[in-house]
Amino acid sequence: MRVEQLTCSIGAELSGLDLAKAVHDDGLFHEIKALLLEHKVLFLRDQDLSRPDHVAFASRLGQLEDHPMAPSHPEAPGLVQIYKRPDQPIDRYENAWHSDGSWRATPAMGCVLRCVECPPVGGDTMWANMALAYERLPEAIKLQIADLRANHSFESSFAAAMPLDKRLAMKVQYPDAEHPVVRTHPDTGEKILYVNAFTTHFTNYHTPAQVRFGQDANPGANDLLRLLVSQAFIPEYQVRWRWQPNSMAIWDNRSTQHYAVMDYPACHRKMERAAIIGDQPF
Image (cartoon, rainbow, N blue to C red; front, side, top):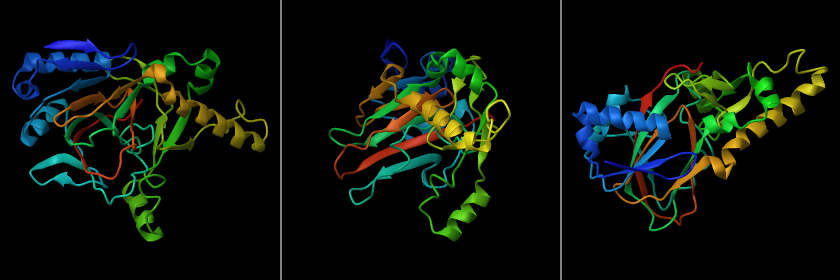
């Protein structure tokens, strides 16, 4: 196996590797897992992986989760079909910087994504290193956000365009989650900036230390949240991957955000993703 670092901040491409072998090879699996913690997202080409092997590899990382808006493949429960058709409108939630499932109480710890069919050009995906984004914040901002918590919402994102009755029913099924603005990686101990496109507001900003008058709350909290969310936009924290059929990406969802670039013409784009259930952020 060869490892090529793709940027100074995040991402490595693995070659000379058949990922299906890692299903049964403990040494190879643990090597891949160590590289994932180091580089945060791993990329592979030419992986003619069966759907059962895709599920089996991802399941070594943990239990797989379903998604309320995308069905699993009938041959492989837990392998979510992210399929785009030429007649389908743009997905408003993939083309925003986000961490998968941060609207859950226990967001995904990671994902294993395989390209089945892609546009001839365009449709790349980008990832950002949110541990580095936190590390490079000004010290005054780090101090201000150390104990802040934030609300993450399914209702305000995936459910927002639904009819009122359905949206409220989905809110009951998937209530908003509250997470620390700065989470700690359970394996590496890194501090990670943990706000993204699913984050609606801070839940404990309105304190005497932050707010002199009630009027302070809205501009102060909103401006700070915009500043923090925008850290994922910085190119020095990013890597960009061009898809081909049988390309794969494996990412640590706790320490990264990603963005699916919707720059391609009307066409089929078929991706299959296994997301691994994570722990409650702390």
